[in-house]
Length: 155
Image 1: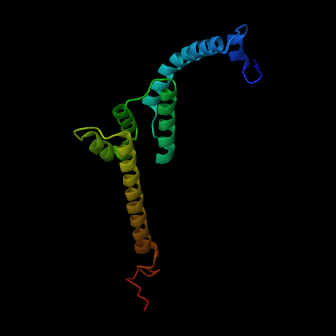
Image 2 (image 1 turned 90 degrees about the horizontal axis):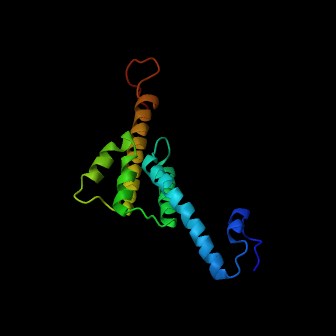
Image 3 (image 1 turned 90 degrees about the vertical axis):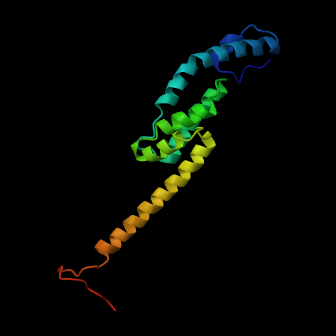
């Protein structure tokens, strides 16, 4: 058997083993112990994951990555818990959205929350952009002449 692709740490756990079955069993046991030790860290990271100043897409990516890591070690996060923790840490700018989602008789699935959030974010940014454009036209587009003496009309 060749061992050129194994790290020194892993190699130390299988030195002297002669069959693939022994190697597989030893690796499974070692990796399982590492996974169980990592589980509390990942669960804490999930509960502490906050949107903060990140974009929605960045927050989604970080949150999903933690959930995927938990799933990879055999500790899947229930869909309802995923929705709950995700909504909890969106922050004050999303308070009405979070309240609406959590007030439903059944907490929506994680996929439903993400889809609704993307629609909400798109609508909010569209309304903000529209508001900013109308503010520019009103203030900077020449609504009043430069001396402030009434309206200047071009025709």
